[in-house]
Length: 318
Image 1 (cartoon, rainbow, N blue to C red):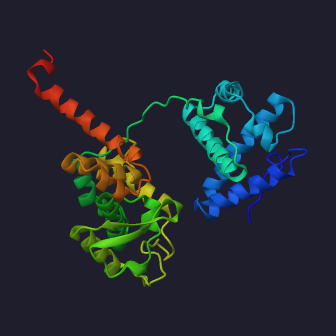
Image 2: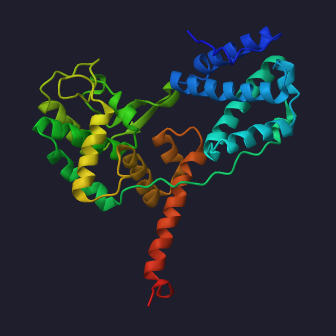
Image 3: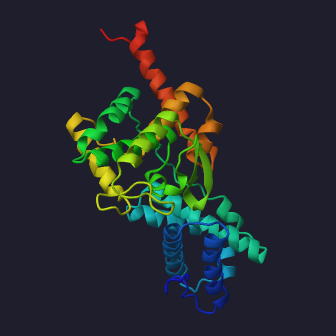
């Protein structure tokens, strides 16, 4: 059952807003199919927004008051966040949450807050994903099984990391797979963010290493059993996989960004270099927006420039 924070609904004379907030969170869960973690984060951001506005305006916050806020009110809120040392990325996310709520509110009461549309999102520094090179990825796939204490655990680690690199899955998606996917075919059904399903192809080499792991596993992997198991037969904890990769990168002298998630970036980056098919990569990764996938175009261009500067006579130093 959804609960609203006391501060969030402390709007004297506005029981309608209290109910509206509850309905909004229910809508996020049931219609938008947001995870409970995301809903908690949304509630937190909206609560902080309403708390600030209540103090800033020195009056209760009602639905009508929300609609009548001016551009300067929203800018004052963003300025306050900046003064507290909150990052532009955090404020951009909070502004997105506020817009989401206003969008829902507008649908329900038939009124919109036009000034909100004029509020600019804080500028963000684009942090490009940092993938492994193709040689690093291949070496990791070949060597990783040797970093576990038991043969079957090494085969499990290899199967997991090959799967992440071959399909671009998030580690949470891979660890949510069950024995129901066995025997493996040439594609897998993945449950991604927002409980959205997508189909990902799985290459023969990945099928083979997963089959090798399943055969060596001392615990039965049944239809409802997690595919990737821990040392005692329970579901593999992501922290164990992260620890294994951390040990590997330390031994091999690799940078700290070599994590399970970096294998997802590596998959997308290497596919981009070969195919330049944004739509296909968007489908593979399960991105809701093509804009998210376009970051890999930037990586591809960056690498192209690096090669150019090394190879071109005018780019060489000395």
